[in-house]
Length: 214
Image 1 (cartoon, rainbow, N blue to C red):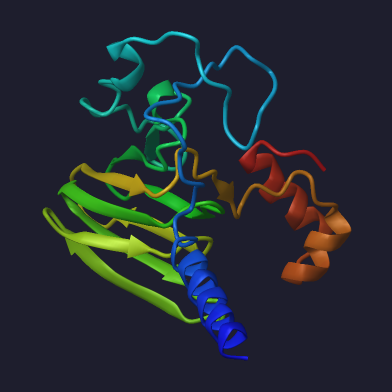
Image 2: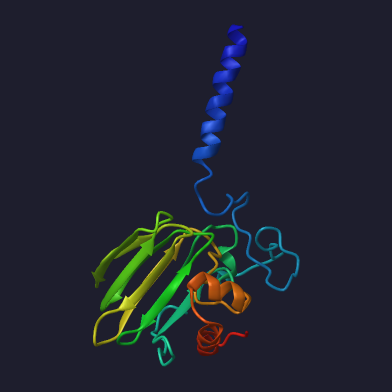
């Protein structure tokens, strides 16, 4: 009985350790590096490893300069994930740069595979996320400030100033994914009309502005 009790204690400790180690968004790596071979179609919860690699696989200058915000939303997101930096494969981290024109909006969206933390490079942003209890958590942040968006929750950023703004975002996933709340084209008009209590005509008008299909 004593031996069985010790085994139970060990089993519980192993279970607790497994839970505590499962907090990261991506699985732990099992080798020093696994540079993504983006040319192989087979995906194994990530990318297959290149046979050989170089320092350029771990480098990108894509976040160095601001990008044009001359679009309908007045913002642009520049990702730096495994698709741009193959060396991030299995490392469980990535980044992005978000540039905003005056009044620019990074509209409500989610990252299904990652928590996000942003650092304001310059300007001021109104930021916030919505909990599953439908509570809005929001504030205004300025240059040098940091704000966090929990994994999977709907969130947004908007430039509340008259000049440009920019932020650097970091994620605990090599490929956090993005689901835009306004990206409705695959959903039928019947569903959207009933969900938002608007007419089919209004749904079509919104979809046309977003480039969607009825």
